[in-house]
Length: 299
Image 1 (cartoon, one colour):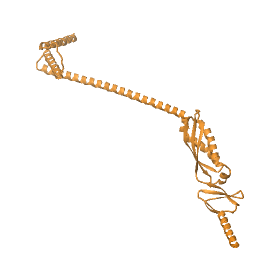
Image 2 (image 1 turned 90 degrees about the vertical axis):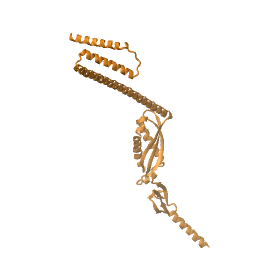
Image 3 (image 1 turned 120 degrees about the horizontal axis):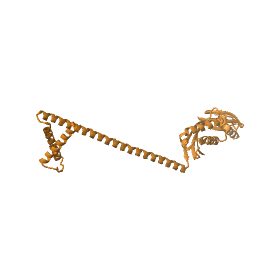
């Protein structure tokens, strides 16, 4: 009976010794092993052994994957506007300097935040609020250069720093929106005024062109009338009529044409004198005027 108890104790002891000796490290993870409180080795993914009973112990389990720390930092711009800037810092442990990442820093996230705050408060005051929005990639690069160089000494690699948002005070945002709205309203008013000006200029050009074409048409019409009268005058003169008789015939014909045009257009007009004698008087007056004009030219 005692033998069985002793054998059972031995088996349990050996099983405990084996379990405390063998350990497995997962992928993308490394373990730091210490022996009697002193750094011994770094173990990578796979199965490993150690001395049991606390002689060798796993001091730290370090994840090698990329991690992200999100920070919100309040500072001011060159034009004295206080803003809250949200940043994301992506970093990981340097596989070539794992011992420093474990032994040099007690709280790496706090250290990263301190360096980021210092870099932001040195970089952002160089820019106005409007320029900060435009140059946020340059500001993020400044932060990356500072934080990356400092954290590398402690076994951390900074992959990238991103500025995800820049939030000024609500009153400042409202003022910016009002300024933007006023600028857009002014631009719209200028565009409408320019459109009205173009309409006026275009209408004036169209009216001018219409008048010009009307004048050309009228001139062509009068020229055609003169050419027609000249031809008629020449033909009548060839038939043996003298100039006075030709002029009398042409004037009478024009007078009748005018009466016909008035009648076709539905005009309500009264010609004075209205009879045939009136037409003869008008013809006589026109011939007298033409004759007087010819006499003046001859004299």
